[in-house]
Length: 623
Image (cartoon, rainbow, N blue to C red; front, side, top):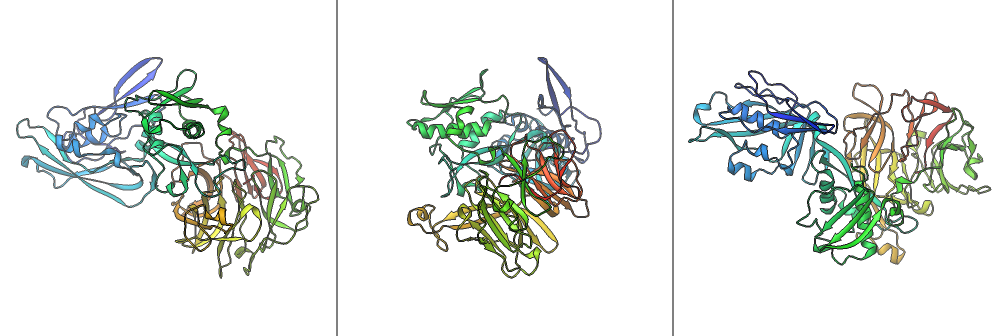
């Protein structure tokens, strides 16, 4: 628990910061506590670099109730792995009952507190009410969720009859802290599982990896935390559509200490007996899950060796991971595609550094101008393309090969106006083509398996509004939707489930054996940008990140990166851009962000300003 508002009165140190610089350690007082009076709030530790560690101070002798509460709140914003110092502010019974790992509540500012009622210290019992405005919560599975509303919890203190020392006897479960303390203490990391639906494999049959973002304490053995979290299984939201290759009950060996890679980047992971006897194929999938999960932690992990009962099971390097599992978002595009002034599908090299490169028509019917287009999507293998006609009433699919014919539309809309017809389409990594019909009389979401055949209507129970834009993740199990209701346009993230045959519930799989079509459903849609009133454009830009264009109520248009769980990543946000109609991004961070604005097609290279590329509309990378 922590916060951002200062207390008053005579002050004593509550925690220390250790700066690791050239081997030296400097300890200094950071925050402080008032002697008496109401608790005004807990001072927030300023944002520091990754080498800064914050340590808690234990309670001082004869500390007042106010100092005890303040010291406890400060201790919870420290880097103490097991909250040992924080527990010193509690009675023995409270320390045993308190479980900080159950949840973390994030407040806009640090928790304020007031004696309730004040001036009762002579009774040997005092209570404080902690208050604040909720921003988010992190649950016991370390999953982040945006939250709103007031925070109001009671802290009860008692005075020991013999020693006269005050301690906290009643404390809320979990941890509460201000937003800036949360940003300093926690970091977002994705753990990886494999898609379990009937299409959960890449074209070559390797399993498709799916990101499951969680928040871990950034200075408390993050590698060990992430391994334990991965072994503990996926978060509740993602669990129905993914699987783990780790055997049930597999965990770190009881004697396993902190995990860290050696000087060669090799991480040895000792597992318990539940993993003994695992076959090589499955073991390498387990190693792939670990490598995907740990790839952005420091020190870097270049190889994973798995052991059980003291014996080596297998090892896998980053270089060989592609032979074991696939991350669809890792495939770098060859081209950037868009619609030119003649309403044709054209392309330029994705890594072109020319200011205004000359676009070339895409081989095939969509590039030859047989039908005027207003939006397009290109399959992730860049072998097929889909285009929506200029009036929005028809969807066409064609191969990207010279001389290919266009054929009849694969889907049509009966919407009365262009704005009430088809959205721009989107491809997943398995070749599925997704598009929504915005017809107010019959709004629907469709999937064309392998980009052809009879469109399959996707069920969207609980959808409150009409779909205005569709972007499916490369893994094929998550989908981003812009949903309109009244004047509000919200970004929602849904989970894609496939089961039985259309209209009939059943386990995933029978559709493959019988030839019957699966039922496809988008479930548990959750907001990714609750503070934005009007989302106008969005695109995936990684396994669990999107770039979004929109505005807050009463605000101006802005472009930002967001995580699928609604949190804001700790990365530089895109430079402002006016009049954005569309945006596209690649998971390959070497590829620039591209948008359609009032200036035409523009791009944002890393470390530079927006640059005009050429005239055109509807830019897209494959996907």
